[in-house]
Amino acid sequence: MSTDVKSDLADEVRNALRTVIDPELGFNIVDLGLIYSIAVESDVALITMTTTTRGCPATSFLKEGARESASTISGVKTVDVTLTYDPPWTPEMMSAEAKKYLGVADGVGW
Amino acid sequence: MIGASLSRWTMSYFAAALLALLAAETLMASGYGFPFAELRSVETLFLVHLVALGWLSLLMSGALLQFVPVLVARPLYSDTLPLPALLALVAGLIALLGGFLQLDGRLTWAMPLLPIAGPLLGVGFALNLWNLGRTLWPLRGLPLPARFVVIGLLSVVVTVALGIVFTLVLSGTTTNERLIQLTAAGVPIHIIAGLGGWLTFSAIGVSYRLLAMFMLAPDVEGWSVRAALSSGTLALALVILGGIIAVCHGLELNTLLAAAAVLGAAALAVYVFDVARLYRARKRRHMELNSRMAGLALASLVAAATLLAAALARGSLSHDVGAIVFLIAFGWLSGLGLAKLYKIVAFLTWLECYGPVLGKTLTPRVQDLVAESRAAKWFWLYFAAVWLGTIALMLDATAVFRAAAAVMLAASVAIIAELVRARCLVEVDAANRLPAGAHRPRLFLCVSQQT
Image 1 (cartoon, one colour):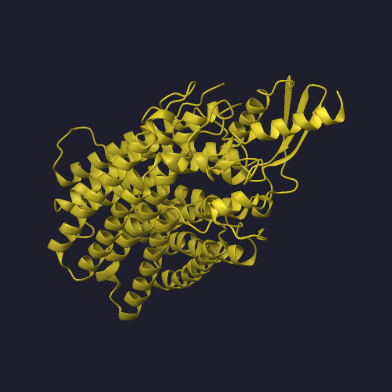
Image 2 (spheres, rainbow over the protein chains, first blue to last red):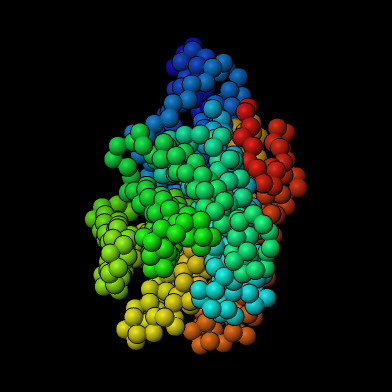
C-alpha cells in the first residue's frame, strides 16, 4: 500500500472518529484533542488516544467507541487503540471549533 | 471490560437515600421533631438519624462507590459487596428508628430493636469500608482529594462505634459505667465525627475532583489543599481522640471544642478559597446547573460557619445549634448532594444506555438527558426554603419553619421527578432516544452491558 493511500485511510479514520462524542463535553473526540495519533499500517489502524481526565468512568466506552468507528472504514481490518496520559490532555489541545463550542478562550491550557 | 467502571448498586443507594429525604421532609412539614420537640427528644433523634443515616450516609456511600474509583483511577475492589452492605444499612436504619419509637413508647414490640440496629449498621458500614479501603490500599501517595475521603472513612468508624455504644446503653443492654459516661457526654463527638468528619470531609474530597472535572478546570493541588487537609484532620483528631479521653476522665469538652472550631474554620476557609479559585479558573465559561447549585451549597456552608462563630461570640450556641446543624445538613450537604445527583444520575444513565453503542451510531450528549432551565427553579426554591427555615429556627418561628419544610418537600419532589425523567430518557429527542443496540435503563439499578 502506497504512502498516499495510507494517509488517505488515516484521514478517513479521523473523520470516522468524529462520530464518537465525549459524553460530558458533548463534542467529538477528534476536535477535543483526545486523539493523539492515527497511523495505518497494512490494514491495521493504530490509534493513540487519551481522556480529559484520568479515571473518567467513560474511558472504556470511549476506547471501544473509537475502535468501533475506525473499523467501519473499508481497508481497515484491525484496530488497535492505545490509551495514554503522557502527555496529559489540556484544553489547549482542542480545535478552534471545539473551543468555540465550549466557550474556551484561544491559547488557554491549564 | 466495557462498563466495568459503572458501580452497579449506586443508583439503588441513591433511590433509598431520596426516599429517606422525602420521609424526613414530610415529618418536618408535619411538625415532628425539633423545633416542635426538644433537641434531645426521641422524636428529634428519630428525625436526625433518618436524615444523617437514611439520606446523607446512603447518598455518600453510593457516591463513594462510584467516585473513589474515579479519584484513584482504578476499579472498585468488589462489585458484590455493595448490595449486602445496602441491605444491612437499610435494615439497621429501620431497626434504629423502630428502637427510638420503642423508647418513646409508640412501638410496643417485645423484641428490643436498638441492640440489633447498632451491629446491623456496623456490618453495613464495615462492608463498604472494606470495599473502599481495598480499592485505596494498593496505592501509595494517594491524590489529595482521596485523602479527604480516607479521613471521612476513618471518621465514620468513630461515628458508628459511638452510635453502637449509645444504642447498647440506651437499650439497657450494658450498664458499664464508662460507656454510660460516654453516652451522656459523647453526643457532640458523635455529631462532629459524623457531620464534620464522615459527611463533610468526604464531600470536600469528592467536590475538589468533581467540580474540576465538570467545569473543565485544572485540579487544585499543593499547599492550600494540604493546609485544608491537615488543619481539618487536626480539628477532628482534637474532637475525637481528645474528646473521648476527656469524657472518660470526666473533663470538660468546651476548650477542646473551641480549639477544634478554630482549626476547622481555618480548614473551611482554605477549602472555600480553593473552590473559588476553581470557579475562576474554569475553562467552561457557561456553567452547568450542578456547578451553579454547588455554589449555593457552598454559600450555605460559609453561612453556617459564620452563624457558628457569631453564636460562640454571643454565647447563644445552645439556642442556635439547631439552626446551624439544619443549615449544614440541608443547605450544605443536601444541597451539594442534590446538585451533584442531578449531574451524576444523567451521566451514569448516559454511560449505561449510550456507552455501549458509542462509535456504532450517533448518540445524544449527557446534557440532552436533562432540562436545566426547568430544574433550575426547583433548586432555587429548595435553597430559598432551606434559608428561610434556618432563619425561622433562629427566631423560634415554628409555623414559618413548618411552611419552609413543606416548600423544601415540594422542591425535592420536583427535583426527584427531574432525576426520574433523566433516568427514563424522557428529555431525549424521540428519534435518537433508543438507537439500535441501546437498552432503556432500569430505574434503580445500573446494568453494565457488554458489547
